[in-house]
Amino acid sequence: MAANGDGFSEVSMEDLMGQVEKRQISTIVFIIAMQKEAQLMINRFRLVKDINSPFPKEVTWVLFNGMYKDLNISIVCPGKDSTLGVDSVGTVPASLVTYASIVAMKPDLIINAGTAGGFKAKGASIADVYIVSSVAFHDRRIPVPGLDLYGVGMRKAFPTPNLIKDLNLKVGRLSTGDSMDMPPHDKESITANDATVKDMEGAAVVYVADIFKVPTILLKGVTDIVDGNRPTSEEFLENLAAVTAKLDESVAKVIDFINGKCLSDL
Ligand SMILES: *[C@@H]1O[C@H](CO)[C@@H](O)[C@H](O)[C@H]1NC(C)=O
Image (tube, rainbow, N blue to C red; front, top):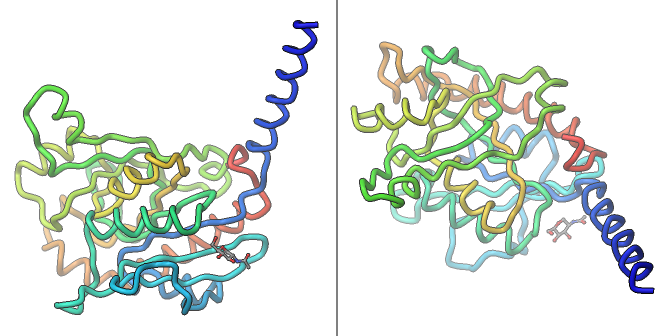
């Protein structure tokens, strides 16, 4: 009797796991630092600004939501800094909106999409769109055993071998820090992180998503070549519009691929 009982519970546990694995992805939350980076996607998926935002009234965070095919898509931007009126880029706002979005919307999948610097020594060119394999920080140097690894905070993105193969995407590691420039200390850490792209949010988004075990993928369009000979900020502003358009095209392909699939199909 005991054996039968065990056998029975094993089967139902397997069924349960199968259902979880095989359930179609339905809710996706995009975390996007700048509304300019998000606007084409907002238009493409016909998302509307959520007037009944689940966020506290004090925050500047902006939520766009709508159905596209079988997917309930939300885009969350941290919005404008309330004092300076500029986009709230960087890891602190990114962590907060990721946390609040997970709590409010319980997404099946998070996508962090945005622009990034790329390293030509690692094969990156302007307007390439990368899917990120892993993330780490490059400006959290803590030379104390154990805390050193905590500072680097390396985490893998959700593996998407079929998506990468089907869409022929470039794959690279991402290094995140709160500065746009690259002083020598950061350069050393970025090299140690073996990064192809460098941004200001990705590792923070994955840190939060990892706490809640929400699978996360990251798409990064290259606006500037960090190891090139032009100032990053100048190149960034010059290429922002064109790269945002490339990023939007890639996001569209990724979303069409994801539609109707389960996490295990990606
Ligand atoms: C989409 O998801 C949000 C967040 O979970 C939910 O509030 C909303 O009702 C959903 N929309 C539809 C059309 O199911």
